[in-house]
Amino acid sequence: MSLTKQKLLCGSIAALFLILAVSPLSFAQDDAEQSYVNLMPHLRLGAGARSIGLGGAFTAIAEDATATVWNPAGLGSSADLSLNFSTQRLSLDRSHNFIAITKMLGDYGSIGLAATNFGVSDYDLSDAAGVHGGTADYSTNAYSLSYGIAFGNFNIGLTGRMLMDSFGIDDVDNQSGFGGVDIGLMGHALHIDVAERMKGQALHTHSNEMSDGNIQVPTFHYGIVAKYLGSSFGDGGATVPMVVNAGVAYDLYMGNVVTFAADIEHEFVNLERSAFSMRGGVEYTIITSKSTEFSLRAGMRASRDARNLFGGFGVNIAGLQVDYAIQDGLETEIEGAGTTQYVSVSYEF
Image (cartoon, rainbow, N blue to C red; front, top):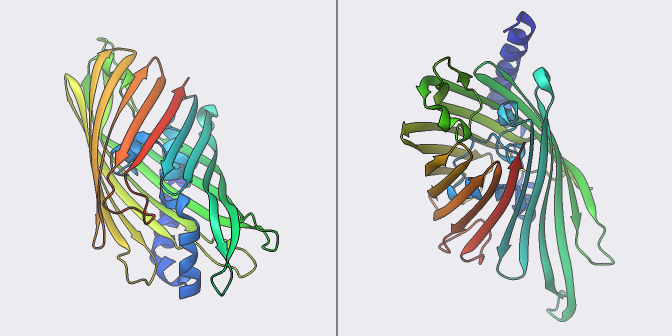
């Protein structure tokens, strides 16, 4: 690693820890501002059915196009070109869609563009007296630009985000604003030699070719990301509460591959509901050839106020990945969502 890259890496790590140290003061909000996060639920729903099937325990292993949402540092290990489209259908005519593209810039890292949409169709309108006044459509969107770069076994990344709201009502102005900056760090360690046929599943591209036909891959991964730093939205200057996620993952190679992942999340708000949650997931990937894989997934998410279970599967054929996930209907980020199903399609070149 060059001296310039070493200085950049050390400076970025120091800046991240400084931000985390001062964030409880710098991003404190009053109750009116805190309530705004409920108007932007799509920011908390994640992206990609693979990550959802793992319960959202994805901070340490997000190295595809969904890294633009989970941890931009993962872009430093992404494929040369990757695409992802995800869709989620909720009850009450609600939908959540995500699309992203990432491109490697050689030794200069990778960039990613992403758009997330959350919409509600034909919701009822009523005046102060409760008189029904017809229906309208609500749509909220987030557009982001991300950058990530790898320094050996360490990655750093940034995401900047713009927000736009449309209430579909003539006398209510649409709103827009800055959705904040995400700063992420990711690392990989404990390399082992595995059979060359595992290379396709080496979801983490920190692998080195070996002269005997094997490859060397890391088995331990860790990551941390601070999200929505400095957000400001609408005429009132509402903010999206800052969120910090930290995660670890371990790949167990035993003919096929088992990945264990765990995350913790803290939201910097003063609300009655718990601002701390834990996520965990396991993925069992069957390697049938160098270009074909099948994966089964299970996950959970728990806080003091809610518990959810997740499951899913994925199929990858020559870089084309199709994933499916399902979330139980016990309690979700959006009340009344019920059992939720997720589908995503991605491709890596």
